[in-house]
Length: 92
Ligand code: HEM
Image (cartoon, rainbow, N blue to C red):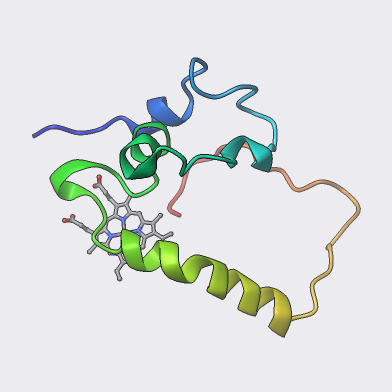
């Protein structure tokens, strides 16, 4: 069996700058160059035979789901402190 090391790909300093900072703009232009270019750099759905079969659906409904959450609820911060986004163990 061949497994793809997504953890290492997503943390490759040759591909990603300043890995531990929150920089959404780092994802801009990710889709340029077509499907293949996107998948080699950023592989949230895995790769190969075991890759997520729901990727197409997820990509299409993600912005709708997020927009619905933003529109339907009143959001507020629970404290003035920044959320700790550091890695931990557990199940997503
Ligand atoms: C943001 C949304 C999603 C993400 C990030 C995601 C990510 C993943 C990942 C990383 C895998 C494992 C790939 C591997 O083992 O290499 C996977 C597997 C799978 N996903 Fe998703 N997924 C998402 C949404 C969905 C949706 C919407 C469906 C179905 C409607 C789905 C169905 C599946 C199934 C059935 C597998 C198992 C595939 C297999 O083992 O053959 N996923 N997904």
